[in-house]
Image (tube, rainbow, N blue to C red; front, side, top):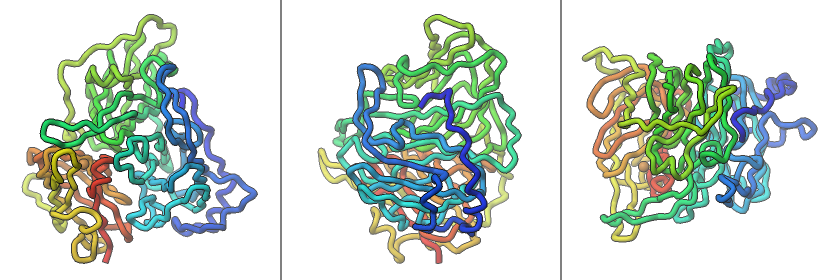
Length: 460
Ligand SMILES: [Cu+2]
């Protein structure tokens, strides 16, 4: 998609009809009236992405575009959803960051039905909470680095609050992605995906339309890392980012930073003051990654010339800059759930199996082995990463609060749905069990999910 164009606001004409149907987000197949268009319509089909005139990528996409269409919806307003699968594989659409019932959340591990090739599914969904969310496929790729999150099945979802103060002049949505990977073995025998094309909104640097801005504008940038496996570092030469939301949730302390770090599935919403006229590059801070395409041109009105890139000297990112300091010794009344991550190496040239508390999915997700949540209770997940890799950990159907960082600092008020836990480190988050049903917890790195790095929590 082009950053300058946005789909028109969703039709509201079906609201009365839907409101009568949907007391909550119930899957009601067959009740969507065939004569009216659904509010959200997705078609999953093969697609040839032109990342640049020299880079054509055979993939699968939503509605013939990468990323899929941006949907702007109203918080709490029921929507009809229709998904047609015209691809060769069973598919499922996960609504990332929403509080949905397991039947439509979009993970087969929770019980969402897969959509067979050629099939169509319909349901009613009530989008909440407000904020920058996204949707993506939730399938298995294994060794096939064109499938699941390696492909083009991801898109933006903005759930607008009931009243929006709109302290900015315009919005831009940017999606980071990595393509055409191959598994390469490292010296110790582990196999990791390595990519040769990276894009922003499906285009390599210089191949897409520039984002055109005017001096004095305050531009809200909603940036999503939809990469299957890679953490990305982004800066905009000549400018800074006033971070106002992480994973779509307003941060307690908006803060201005020179660059953003986004782990897979993380989002950052930041306001950029357009106060430095010129033609600039917004792109990956690491030169070797930007060289594979991850960049986009930001062009001021009446400015011309070659886009400028200024190389930052070091990589800087710290969740605590945007959080409150927790009261020292205030403690927590939350019940603790310890989750230890490690891997069991299967032998040279083979993949490791990932484990949570010594077991891989599905062995770790039986009534005997997985945590049982009690509705209304507050829980603290103590994530102890004993492996040699970093893991972006995601909890479905709930928002958590990051409470303890890797250096032991206690923080408060930072609400997210993905948090990066570095190798050998421990991070603690808390959430209230307020959405009964099976709840998937997993590493968002595709090759780790595929090798058992998932766990289903159930409610008593
Ligand atoms: Cu992982």
